[in-house]
Image (cartoon, rainbow, N blue to C red):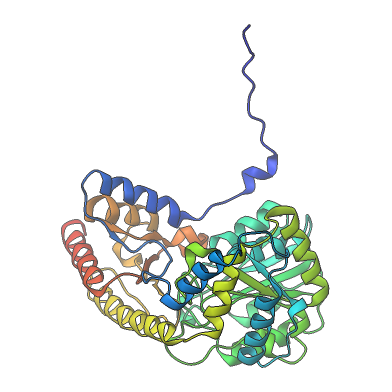
Length: 395
Protein backbone atom coordinates (compact mmCIF):
# COMPACT_ATOMS: atom_id res chain seq x y z
CA UNK A 1 0.00 0.00 0.00
CA UNK A 2 1.12 3.55 -0.71
CA UNK A 3 0.64 6.13 1.98
CA UNK A 4 -0.20 9.70 1.14
CA UNK A 5 2.34 12.33 2.14
CA UNK A 6 0.75 14.93 4.38
CA UNK A 7 1.92 18.51 4.71
CA UNK A 8 2.90 19.61 8.18
CA UNK A 9 0.32 22.13 9.29
CA UNK A 10 1.69 24.22 12.13
CA UNK A 11 -0.44 26.51 14.24
CA UNK A 12 -0.18 30.11 13.04
CA UNK A 13 1.29 31.21 16.36
CA UNK A 14 4.47 29.23 15.61
CA UNK A 15 5.33 31.84 12.98
CA UNK A 16 5.47 34.41 15.80
CA UNK A 17 8.01 32.42 17.83
CA UNK A 18 11.55 33.77 17.82
CA UNK A 19 14.78 32.23 19.03
CA UNK A 20 17.97 32.96 20.93
CA UNK A 21 20.66 33.63 18.35
CA UNK A 22 23.52 32.80 20.71
CA UNK A 23 22.81 29.10 20.34
CA UNK A 24 22.66 29.37 16.53
CA UNK A 25 26.03 31.12 16.43
CA UNK A 26 27.45 28.54 18.84
CA UNK A 27 26.39 25.74 16.47
CA UNK A 28 28.04 27.51 13.52
CA UNK A 29 31.20 28.14 15.55
CA UNK A 30 31.36 24.48 16.60
CA UNK A 31 30.96 23.42 12.97
CA UNK A 32 33.95 25.60 12.03
CA UNK A 33 35.95 24.04 14.86
CA UNK A 34 35.06 20.59 13.50
CA UNK A 35 36.73 21.70 10.26
CA UNK A 36 39.92 22.48 12.16
CA UNK A 37 39.40 26.22 12.70
CA UNK A 38 40.46 27.88 15.97
CA UNK A 39 37.50 29.88 17.28
CA UNK A 40 37.43 32.25 20.25
CA UNK A 41 33.99 31.88 21.83
CA UNK A 42 32.58 35.21 22.96
CA UNK A 43 29.02 34.50 21.89
CA UNK A 44 27.42 32.35 24.56
CA UNK A 45 26.08 33.82 27.80
CA UNK A 46 27.25 31.39 30.45
CA UNK A 47 30.06 31.50 33.01
CA UNK A 48 33.16 29.59 31.95
CA UNK A 49 33.72 28.44 35.54
CA UNK A 50 32.74 25.10 37.01
CA UNK A 51 29.88 24.86 39.49
CA UNK A 52 31.42 25.21 43.00
CA UNK A 53 32.40 21.87 44.52
CA UNK A 54 30.15 22.15 47.58
CA UNK A 55 27.11 22.51 45.30
CA UNK A 56 28.13 19.56 43.14
CA UNK A 57 28.66 17.44 46.25
CA UNK A 58 25.20 18.40 47.54
CA UNK A 59 23.61 17.40 44.25
CA UNK A 60 25.43 14.07 44.14
CA UNK A 61 24.53 13.37 47.75
CA UNK A 62 20.89 14.12 46.95
CA UNK A 63 20.94 11.57 44.13
CA UNK A 64 22.29 8.91 46.45
CA UNK A 65 19.66 9.79 49.06
CA UNK A 66 16.81 9.22 46.61
CA UNK A 67 15.95 12.72 45.38
CA UNK A 68 15.18 11.25 41.98
CA UNK A 69 11.38 11.42 42.03
CA UNK A 70 8.64 13.95 41.41
CA UNK A 71 8.35 16.89 43.74
CA UNK A 72 5.75 19.65 44.15
CA UNK A 73 5.19 21.71 41.00
CA UNK A 74 6.07 24.91 42.87
CA UNK A 75 9.31 23.39 44.19
CA UNK A 76 10.53 21.59 47.29
CA UNK A 77 9.32 23.37 50.41
CA UNK A 78 12.79 23.56 51.96
CA UNK A 79 14.21 25.31 48.89
CA UNK A 80 11.24 27.68 48.72
CA UNK A 81 11.82 28.55 52.39
CA UNK A 82 15.50 29.24 51.72
CA UNK A 83 14.69 31.37 48.65
CA UNK A 84 12.03 33.29 50.61
CA UNK A 85 14.56 34.08 53.31
CA UNK A 86 17.23 35.01 50.74
CA UNK A 87 14.93 37.42 48.91
CA UNK A 88 13.65 38.85 52.21
CA UNK A 89 17.24 39.61 53.22
CA UNK A 90 18.50 40.93 49.88
CA UNK A 91 15.43 42.94 48.79
CA UNK A 92 14.36 44.08 52.26
CA UNK A 93 10.81 42.74 51.91
CA UNK A 94 8.94 39.98 53.72
CA UNK A 95 8.56 36.93 51.45
CA UNK A 96 6.74 33.72 52.30
CA UNK A 97 7.38 30.30 50.70
CA UNK A 98 3.95 30.29 49.03
CA UNK A 99 5.12 33.32 47.05
CA UNK A 100 7.98 31.34 45.47
CA UNK A 101 7.83 29.10 42.40
CA UNK A 102 10.91 27.10 41.39
CA UNK A 103 11.24 26.37 37.68
CA UNK A 104 13.77 24.68 35.33
CA UNK A 105 15.77 27.79 34.38
CA UNK A 106 14.85 31.45 34.22
CA UNK A 107 12.95 31.36 30.93
CA UNK A 108 9.83 29.59 32.28
CA UNK A 109 9.15 32.57 34.57
CA UNK A 110 9.31 34.85 31.52
CA UNK A 111 7.03 32.56 29.50
CA UNK A 112 4.57 31.79 32.30
CA UNK A 113 4.27 35.42 33.42
CA UNK A 114 3.53 36.66 29.90
CA UNK A 115 1.19 33.73 29.27
CA UNK A 116 -0.72 34.26 32.52
CA UNK A 117 -1.06 38.03 32.31
CA UNK A 118 -1.40 39.03 28.66
CA UNK A 119 -3.40 38.10 25.59
CA UNK A 120 -4.57 39.53 22.27
CA UNK A 121 -5.18 43.26 22.57
CA UNK A 122 -2.91 43.69 25.59
CA UNK A 123 0.43 45.47 25.53
CA UNK A 124 3.70 44.47 27.17
CA UNK A 125 6.56 46.98 27.42
CA UNK A 126 10.01 45.41 27.19
CA UNK A 127 13.62 46.66 26.89
CA UNK A 128 15.21 46.83 23.43
CA UNK A 129 17.97 45.91 22.86
CA UNK A 130 17.11 43.18 25.33
CA UNK A 131 16.98 39.46 25.97
CA UNK A 132 15.26 38.16 22.81
CA UNK A 133 12.90 35.79 24.62
CA UNK A 134 10.90 38.75 25.96
CA UNK A 135 9.77 39.88 22.52
CA UNK A 136 9.42 36.32 21.26
CA UNK A 137 7.04 35.29 24.04
CA UNK A 138 4.98 38.48 23.86
CA UNK A 139 4.43 37.91 20.14
CA UNK A 140 3.77 34.22 20.64
CA UNK A 141 0.85 34.76 23.02
CA UNK A 142 -0.64 37.32 20.63
CA UNK A 143 -0.08 40.45 22.71
CA UNK A 144 1.55 43.60 21.35
CA UNK A 145 5.26 43.95 22.07
CA UNK A 146 6.06 47.59 22.86
CA UNK A 147 9.83 48.22 22.88
CA UNK A 148 11.41 50.87 25.03
CA UNK A 149 14.71 51.99 23.56
CA UNK A 150 17.74 51.61 25.80
CA UNK A 151 20.09 54.34 24.61
CA UNK A 152 23.85 54.41 24.83
CA UNK A 153 23.93 58.05 25.96
CA UNK A 154 22.01 56.97 29.09
CA UNK A 155 24.44 54.10 29.73
CA UNK A 156 21.66 51.87 28.40
CA UNK A 157 19.28 52.82 31.21
CA UNK A 158 15.73 53.45 30.08
CA UNK A 159 14.24 56.94 29.74
CA UNK A 160 11.52 57.05 32.41
CA UNK A 161 9.63 59.88 30.69
CA UNK A 162 9.47 57.77 27.57
CA UNK A 163 8.24 54.82 29.62
CA UNK A 164 5.53 56.92 31.26
CA UNK A 165 4.24 58.00 27.84
CA UNK A 166 3.91 54.36 26.76
CA UNK A 167 1.76 53.19 29.68
CA UNK A 168 -1.96 53.10 28.90
CA UNK A 169 -5.09 51.10 29.76
CA UNK A 170 -3.93 48.23 27.52
CA UNK A 171 -0.58 47.86 29.29
CA UNK A 172 -0.59 44.65 31.34
CA UNK A 173 3.09 44.09 32.03
CA UNK A 174 6.38 46.01 32.07
CA UNK A 175 9.61 44.02 31.84
CA UNK A 176 12.73 45.37 33.54
CA UNK A 177 16.18 43.80 33.39
CA UNK A 178 19.03 45.03 35.58
CA UNK A 179 21.90 44.27 35.28
CA UNK A 180 20.99 44.04 31.62
CA UNK A 181 21.66 41.60 28.83
CA UNK A 182 23.13 42.50 26.32
CA UNK A 183 24.38 45.95 27.34
CA UNK A 184 25.53 45.48 30.94
CA UNK A 185 23.48 48.54 31.88
CA UNK A 186 22.39 48.88 35.51
CA UNK A 187 19.34 50.78 36.77
CA UNK A 188 20.14 53.22 39.55
CA UNK A 189 18.01 53.83 42.64
CA UNK A 190 16.65 57.05 41.13
CA UNK A 191 15.60 55.11 38.01
CA UNK A 192 13.72 52.51 40.05
CA UNK A 193 11.97 55.20 42.08
CA UNK A 194 10.96 57.08 38.93
CA UNK A 195 9.66 53.91 37.25
CA UNK A 196 7.44 53.18 40.24
CA UNK A 197 6.08 56.74 40.11
CA UNK A 198 5.43 56.41 36.38
CA UNK A 199 3.40 53.25 36.98
CA UNK A 200 1.48 54.99 39.73
CA UNK A 201 -2.10 53.74 40.02
CA UNK A 202 -2.10 51.95 36.68
CA UNK A 203 -3.14 48.31 37.05
CA UNK A 204 0.16 47.05 35.67
CA UNK A 205 2.47 44.25 36.81
CA UNK A 206 6.25 44.38 36.59
CA UNK A 207 8.45 41.43 35.63
CA UNK A 208 11.83 42.33 37.13
CA UNK A 209 14.52 40.10 35.63
CA UNK A 210 17.36 40.21 38.14
CA UNK A 211 19.22 37.08 37.05
CA UNK A 212 22.55 39.02 37.08
CA UNK A 213 21.91 40.72 40.44
CA UNK A 214 25.06 39.27 42.04
CA UNK A 215 27.25 40.36 39.11
CA UNK A 216 27.51 44.13 39.65
CA UNK A 217 30.91 45.79 39.32
CA UNK A 218 30.17 49.33 40.48
CA UNK A 219 27.41 50.53 42.74
CA UNK A 220 24.64 48.41 44.24
CA UNK A 221 21.75 46.35 42.97
CA UNK A 222 18.32 47.95 43.34
CA UNK A 223 15.06 46.02 42.93
CA UNK A 224 11.69 47.61 42.29
CA UNK A 225 10.25 44.91 44.55
CA UNK A 226 11.89 46.69 47.49
CA UNK A 227 9.81 49.86 47.09
CA UNK A 228 6.71 50.51 49.16
CA UNK A 229 3.62 49.27 47.39
CA UNK A 230 5.51 47.41 44.66
CA UNK A 231 6.03 43.96 46.16
CA UNK A 232 2.49 42.78 45.29
CA UNK A 233 2.87 44.19 41.79
CA UNK A 234 6.26 42.68 41.02
CA UNK A 235 7.33 39.29 39.70
CA UNK A 236 10.97 38.85 40.65
CA UNK A 237 12.97 36.57 38.36
CA UNK A 238 16.25 35.23 39.69
CA UNK A 239 18.10 31.94 39.68
CA UNK A 240 21.29 29.96 39.98
CA UNK A 241 22.68 29.76 36.42
CA UNK A 242 24.72 32.98 36.28
CA UNK A 243 25.53 33.42 39.96
CA UNK A 244 26.74 29.90 40.66
CA UNK A 245 27.77 28.74 37.15
CA UNK A 246 24.85 26.29 37.12
CA UNK A 247 23.51 26.82 33.59
CA UNK A 248 23.20 23.12 32.88
CA UNK A 249 21.42 22.40 36.16
CA UNK A 250 18.37 24.30 34.84
CA UNK A 251 16.98 26.03 37.89
CA UNK A 252 15.49 29.45 38.42
CA UNK A 253 12.67 30.91 40.45
CA UNK A 254 10.01 33.55 40.54
CA UNK A 255 8.78 35.49 43.58
CA UNK A 256 5.31 37.03 43.32
CA UNK A 257 2.04 37.43 45.19
CA UNK A 258 0.69 34.10 46.41
CA UNK A 259 -2.42 34.25 44.19
CA UNK A 260 -0.33 34.57 41.03
CA UNK A 261 2.20 32.00 42.29
CA UNK A 262 -0.60 29.41 42.45
CA UNK A 263 -1.42 30.02 38.78
CA UNK A 264 2.25 29.90 37.74
CA UNK A 265 2.57 26.59 39.62
CA UNK A 266 -0.40 25.26 37.60
CA UNK A 267 1.45 26.17 34.42
CA UNK A 268 4.40 24.17 35.75
CA UNK A 269 2.08 21.22 36.40
CA UNK A 270 0.82 21.41 32.83
CA UNK A 271 4.26 21.72 31.25
CA UNK A 272 7.25 20.35 33.14
CA UNK A 273 5.49 18.81 36.18
CA UNK A 274 8.32 19.94 38.44
CA UNK A 275 11.96 20.95 38.59
CA UNK A 276 14.39 18.06 39.15
CA UNK A 277 14.51 17.34 42.88
CA UNK A 278 18.24 16.72 43.22
CA UNK A 279 19.07 20.06 41.58
CA UNK A 280 16.84 21.78 44.12
CA UNK A 281 18.80 20.22 46.97
CA UNK A 282 21.95 21.58 45.32
CA UNK A 283 20.22 24.97 45.17
CA UNK A 284 19.71 24.91 48.93
CA UNK A 285 23.44 24.45 49.37
CA UNK A 286 24.16 27.21 46.85
CA UNK A 287 22.22 29.78 48.87
CA UNK A 288 23.18 28.51 52.33
CA UNK A 289 26.78 27.58 51.67
CA UNK A 290 30.01 29.50 51.15
CA UNK A 291 29.81 32.44 48.74
CA UNK A 292 33.51 32.90 48.00
CA UNK A 293 33.12 31.40 44.52
CA UNK A 294 30.54 34.05 43.60
CA UNK A 295 32.89 36.84 44.65
CA UNK A 296 35.76 35.19 42.77
CA UNK A 297 33.76 34.95 39.53
CA UNK A 298 32.59 38.55 39.79
CA UNK A 299 36.15 39.79 40.32
CA UNK A 300 37.36 37.79 37.31
CA UNK A 301 34.55 39.13 35.13
CA UNK A 302 35.40 42.69 36.18
CA UNK A 303 39.06 42.27 35.16
CA UNK A 304 38.06 40.72 31.84
CA UNK A 305 35.55 43.51 31.22
CA UNK A 306 38.28 46.09 31.75
CA UNK A 307 40.61 44.34 29.29
CA UNK A 308 37.89 43.93 26.69
CA UNK A 309 36.63 47.51 26.83
CA UNK A 310 40.12 49.00 26.75
CA UNK A 311 41.04 46.82 23.79
CA UNK A 312 37.88 47.54 21.80
CA UNK A 313 38.31 51.29 22.23
CA UNK A 314 41.70 51.04 20.48
CA UNK A 315 40.20 49.41 17.37
CA UNK A 316 39.25 51.63 14.45
CA UNK A 317 35.49 52.07 14.16
CA UNK A 318 34.72 50.62 17.61
CA UNK A 319 33.70 52.53 20.73
CA UNK A 320 32.59 50.87 23.94
CA UNK A 321 31.15 52.15 27.20
CA UNK A 322 32.09 50.45 30.45
CA UNK A 323 29.23 48.14 31.47
CA UNK A 324 28.48 48.08 35.19
CA UNK A 325 27.10 44.56 35.49
CA UNK A 326 26.57 41.09 33.93
CA UNK A 327 29.42 39.73 31.78
CA UNK A 328 28.90 41.37 28.39
CA UNK A 329 30.25 44.37 26.54
CA UNK A 330 28.20 46.10 23.85
CA UNK A 331 30.44 48.17 21.57
CA UNK A 332 29.11 50.69 19.07
CA UNK A 333 30.36 49.74 15.59
CA UNK A 334 28.54 52.36 13.48
CA UNK A 335 31.82 54.02 12.49
CA UNK A 336 32.89 50.84 10.73
CA UNK A 337 30.12 51.38 8.18
CA UNK A 338 29.14 47.72 8.48
CA UNK A 339 25.70 46.45 9.53
CA UNK A 340 25.83 44.50 12.78
CA UNK A 341 24.87 41.08 11.41
CA UNK A 342 27.25 41.32 8.46
CA UNK A 343 30.12 42.34 10.72
CA UNK A 344 29.43 39.59 13.27
CA UNK A 345 29.36 37.01 10.47
CA UNK A 346 32.61 38.31 9.00
CA UNK A 347 34.41 38.23 12.34
CA UNK A 348 33.41 34.60 12.80
CA UNK A 349 34.09 33.45 9.25
CA UNK A 350 37.28 35.42 8.60
CA UNK A 351 38.77 36.12 12.03
CA UNK A 352 37.59 33.17 14.09
CA UNK A 353 35.90 35.36 16.72
CA UNK A 354 32.34 34.38 17.67
CA UNK A 355 30.22 37.36 18.73
CA UNK A 356 26.57 38.32 18.37
CA UNK A 357 24.99 40.99 16.25
CA UNK A 358 23.23 43.68 18.24
CA UNK A 359 20.13 42.95 16.17
CA UNK A 360 19.92 39.54 17.86
CA UNK A 361 18.56 41.58 20.77
CA UNK A 362 16.04 43.65 18.84
CA UNK A 363 15.85 46.29 16.14
CA UNK A 364 17.44 48.94 18.38
CA UNK A 365 20.57 46.77 18.59
CA UNK A 366 21.60 47.75 15.07
CA UNK A 367 25.00 49.41 15.16
CA UNK A 368 26.29 47.25 18.02
CA UNK A 369 27.87 43.86 18.73
CA UNK A 370 27.73 41.82 21.93
CA UNK A 371 30.84 40.13 23.24
CA UNK A 372 30.68 37.88 26.30
CA UNK A 373 33.68 38.14 28.63
CA UNK A 374 33.02 34.64 29.97
CA UNK A 375 36.40 33.53 28.67
CA UNK A 376 40.01 33.84 29.80
CA UNK A 377 41.97 37.08 29.48
CA UNK A 378 44.36 35.20 27.19
CA UNK A 379 41.52 34.36 24.80
CA UNK A 380 40.00 37.83 25.08
CA UNK A 381 43.35 39.35 24.09
CA UNK A 382 43.59 36.86 21.22
CA UNK A 383 40.12 37.89 20.05
CA UNK A 384 41.02 41.59 20.25
CA UNK A 385 44.14 41.01 18.16
CA UNK A 386 42.13 39.12 15.56
CA UNK A 387 39.43 41.79 15.37
CA UNK A 388 42.08 44.51 15.07
CA UNK A 389 43.86 42.62 12.28
CA UNK A 390 40.58 42.08 10.43
CA UNK A 391 39.70 45.77 10.70
CA UNK A 392 43.14 46.80 9.43
CA UNK A 393 42.61 44.67 6.32
CA UNK A 394 38.95 45.46 5.64
CA UNK A 395 38.22 49.04 6.74
